[in-house]
Amino acid sequence: MKANVYRGPYKLQIEDKPRPEVQKQSDVVLRITATCICGSDLHLYHGLISPDLPGQTLGHENVGIVEDVGSAVNFVKKGDRVVVPFNISCGECEFCQSGLWSMCDNANPFNPKGPGAAFGYAKLLGGYDGGQAEYLRVPFADTMCLKIPEGVKDEQAVLLADIFPTGFYGCDIAGVKPGHVVVVGGSGPVGLMAQMSALLRGAARVYALDRVPERLELSRKIGAVPINVDREDPVKKIMDDTSGSGADACVEAVGYEATGKGMIAPGKNVELKPLVVLETLMKVAKKGALIGMPGLFAPTPADPEGRVSFPLGYAFTKELGFRMGQCNVKNYNRYLMQAIKDGRVDPSIIVTHREALDRAPKLYEQFDKREGGIVKVVLLP
Ligand SMILES: NC(=O)c1ccc[n+]([C@@H]2O[C@H](COP(=O)([O-])OP(=O)(O)OC[C@H]3O[C@@H](n4cnc5c(N)ncnc54)[C@H](O)[C@@H]3O)[C@@H](O)[C@H]2O)c1
Ligand SMILES: [Zn+2]
Ligand SMILES: [Zn+2]
Image (tube, rainbow, N blue to C red; front, side, top):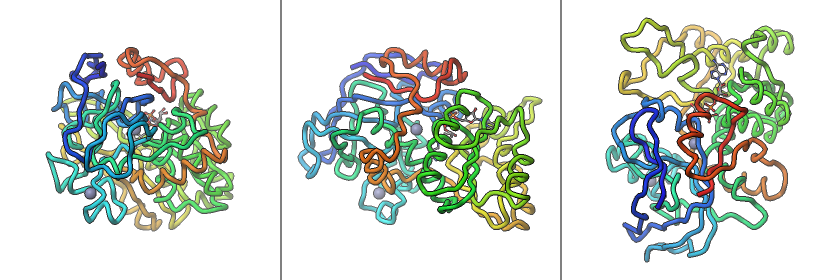
C-alpha cells in the first residue's frame, strides 16, 4: 500500500509498505477514506519531537471503513465507517477509566508510565504507524472506534479525530461558560476550532489572535473578532473593549513554535520566545481567569525537559490558572458528532484542501509555509 513516510526533518516521501494486519485480536484494520495533516505534524516535520523513527507512517487524524476484525473485537463490525481518536488508549487502565485517555498505561510500549500513545507520533508516543496511508491498524478497537452516522461527511468526521475535540478541550480546561469573553491565541485549525467551541458553549464574545489574513478571515466567518497581532496591539484592543477588566477565559492554540523552532535555539544567537502568545493571554486575562493550553509544548532533543523562563510572580499575583496537555478526544467526540449531525456546527468550513495522498509531501511544505491560503488539508487515499 501507499504511505506517507517520515525519513527525517523536512524529508517525507510516498513509499510502498506492506498492508497492516490484525496483530492482536483486539485490533481492526481500516481502509482509510480521509486523513489530515495537523499542526502537530509540523513539530515532527521540523525534527523537534524525536527524530528516532525513520520509516514511520505519519497521520493521527483518521477516518476509514473497517475491513479486518480481530476475534476479540465485540462491537465494531466489518464495513463500519468510523473515526478514531489520535490518542491510543486501552480503555481498561486507571487513567483511561478516569477519562485521561491520553495517559494510558497500556498503549506505549516504549514508555508504559509515560505520556500514552498516538498514531504516527514517533517513539515518544508509542511508535505506531499513522493513517496517511491506504490502510491503518487500530489497536483496542472497541475503545477506539466511533461509528459515523449517516448524514455526517468524512471531511466533517475526520475533524473529530483531533482538532474539533482539541479546540473544545481548550475551552473546557479554560472554564469557558455562557456569557464569557474569551480570547484564543492562534487561528490555525486548533484555534479556529477553539473559537467555534467557545461560541457553541455560549461565549458572548470571542477574540482571535493571529497574523495570517486568510486564517483571521475564517475566524470572522466563525463569528469571532479577528485581531492581526502584527497590525494591532491585542492587549490594548481587548482591555479597551472590556473597560479594563479583561477576558474571562483564554486558550493558547499556537504552541512552542510561536517565534521559532522549539523552546531554545541551541548554539545560535537567536532568542526564541515560545511563550509570547501565552504572555499576551496572561495580560488580557481577567484576575483569577483560567488559561487552557492545547498548543503543544513538548520536550525536544535539544531541550529534554522543555525548560522556559516563565513570569510566575505575575501569574501568582493575578491568581491565574493553567491547564495543558493532550486533548482526551474520547471525552468530547461523541457529542460533537451529534452537534455536527444536528447541523448546529460545521467544522469543515476550515477545510481548504482535499487532495490525493500522493501530494502529501508537497502539502506539508505548503502548510508549513502557510502558503496559498492553506488551513486544513484532508488527504483522500
Ligand atoms: N493538545 C493537543 O492535544 C493538540 C492537538 C492538536 C494540535 N495541538 C497543537 O496545537 C497547536 C496548533 O495546531 P494547529 O493545527 O492549529 O497548527 P498551525 O501551526 O496551523 O497553527 C498555529 C497558528 O498560530 C499562529 N501563530 C504562530 N505564531 C504566532 C504568534 N506569535 N502570534 C499569533 N499567532 C501566531 C500561526 O499563524 C498559525 O495560524 C500546535 O502546537 C499543535 O501541535 C495540540
Ligand atoms: Zn492533529
Ligand atoms: Zn489505558
